Picture 1 (tube, rainbow, N blue to C red):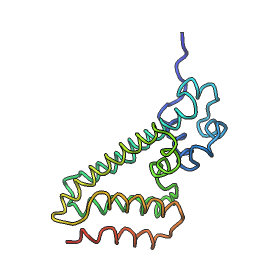
Picture 2 (cartoon, rainbow, N blue to C red):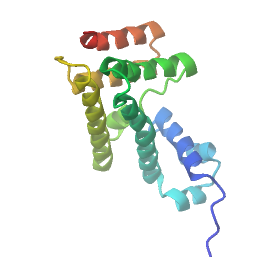
Picture 3 (cartoon, one colour):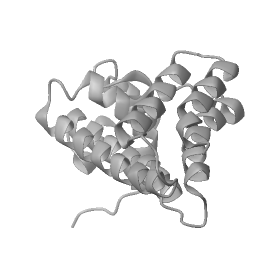
Length: 186
C-alpha cells in the first residue's frame, strides 16, 4: 500500500513555479527544485515526474491563477471597460510598488525561453495568449467604439511585465500604463 503524501501539493507546485519563473527552465537545477520544495529528488519524481513535467505543471499553475485572475478582472461587468483595462495594467504597477516583484511574467518567459524549442510549451503559451486576448476583447468592447485591439493591449501589458523584470522604475511603469490606456479615455 502506498504511503499518503506528507506535503501539500499546491504549496509545493507554487514554490516550484516561483523558481522556474525567476530562473527559467535551463537555469533551474534539481537542487534548486529540491531546496524550494523541501522534497527529495525521489519524492519530486514520484509526485510530479521529471524536470520537464514539473516545469509544465508550474506553467499551467501560473496560467490558472495569474492569467485566470486577470480574466476575472477583465470580464467584471461591475466595472467600466476603461476601469477593467486600467486594473489590468495596475497589476504590474502594484506588484512592483507593493511587493517589489521583479519576476516579470512567467508566460512571457516561457514564450521566449521554451516555446521556440518545445511544441508542448508552445501550445500551452498559445492557448493562454488566446484566453488573455479573449478577456481583453470583452473589456475593449465595454469601452465603446475604439480603434484599439486585443493584440495591442496584450503587447502593452506583456511589455510592462518585461519592463518590471528589467528593473524599470515606477515612473516608467506608470507612464507605460498611461500610454497604453490613451485609446480608452473617451
